[in-house]
Image 1: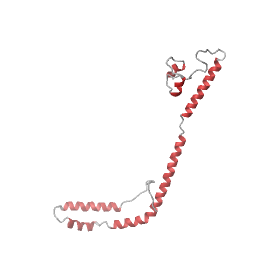
Image 2: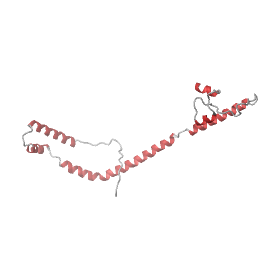
Image 3: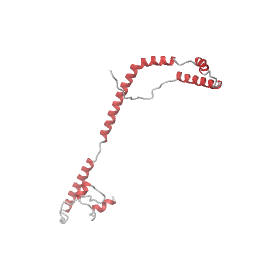
Image 4: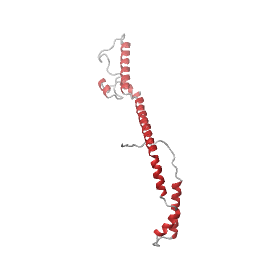
Length: 173
């Protein structure tokens, strides 16, 4: 507030009222140009009315500038709601497509997991595949153990829903 004080009382370095409207600074006059010219001295009987008039005009100008610079945040929140509704619609479409494809997915999963060899079959195939004799028996056992762990992990795999997933999809008919 102290920076405005010199501008309020007419500092010799203050700018004209035209510059105030365009580029206000701490040096520009707060009240702008006087209604009466600078050379005219107001008479004592109309000084109070003149200062009230200046004050009202200045307040109107400040209110107008504030209204011009006001940002309506309620309209930005509306955009968020539209995006949320669009995401919900897309999630519903995605879930409908997944339900439609689920029987085919189940058949595919059963067919592909059936092709995973058992550990017993793998133990028989590993020595035949690695018959060159350059791999030690303990390495073969380690590979067998790893295959057993992978098979156990695949059979124990569970899928849990953690939230909606929105995936952009183009459905061609």
